[in-house]
Length: 213
Image 1 (spheres, rainbow, N blue to C red):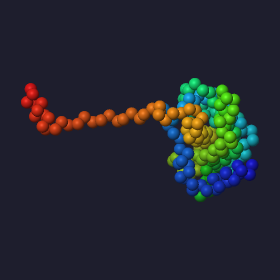
Image 2 (image 1 turned 90 degrees about the horizontal axis):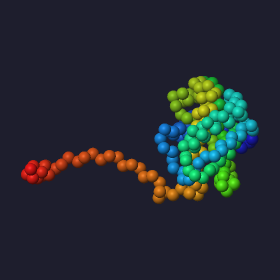
Image 3 (image 1 turned 45 degrees about the horizontal axis):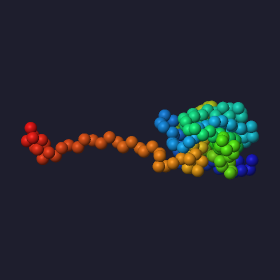
Image 4 (image 1 turned 120 degrees about the horizontal axis):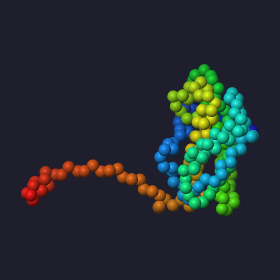
């Protein structure tokens, strides 16, 4: 409890940390996923019965957190179609869903803190020795600049945080993809070069072509 509060309290009080919210901005799901190697998501188990709500905050049930996080994880990680199965174990440690306040000074930001584990299905063991704690703030946008408590309902706030948490978990997997998922940088898809613009022939070339005719 003390650890969760120590993470949440400063983020709730310092609403001016807009640069941190920008770091949690969602990436585009429409494009291809960041290569991970031989990875396919099996189970994503979310436990939130012990989540601590840090006031001031709107209240959310464990079932609501489990549903919104599973949806965000599925959208991001079901895109991978490797042969080896891996499972997620996610524990929601704490949260705060911003309530209406006086913009900008007294409008807190929404925050979510969770712990993540990755399990290798074939080996039957965790890949990470210690749970990875992930802390995310709401994304910076026109709706959240003055605090999402004024502009978003609870469901929108939770979805925003869940999507940002899924992005952070993906970044964590990318950081460990060579050790965990047999990712080989040498076989990674190369970026497609932009189409070159045909060069205008030099005058001498034009004259030679004309003489040839």
